[in-house]
Length: 110
Image (tube, rainbow, N blue to C red; front, side):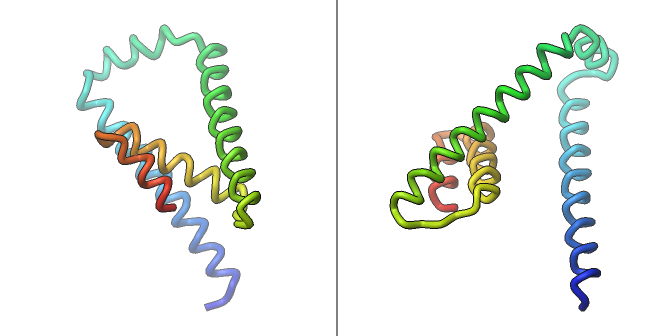
């Protein structure tokens, strides 16, 4: 298999995972509340404040991943920042959706 077709396949897998995640989130939202209630709720969101909250959340994760990078480099472990950033999000996911702090243990295993 050539590298060009491999890159294309990886790109499609990446976009496929995003589409599946968005679809599952939509199904979850529709199970929680009826569609008119969702539209009414989202209509009252202040977009500048929501964008600011999202940006601050991403910046917080970026800073925490950077801190882990500093700790790991001081211990002689070289890890790419992108890996730390995505691993931190994986840990946050497990911490939010599973009980008893399993996210911290998952993040430690990565």
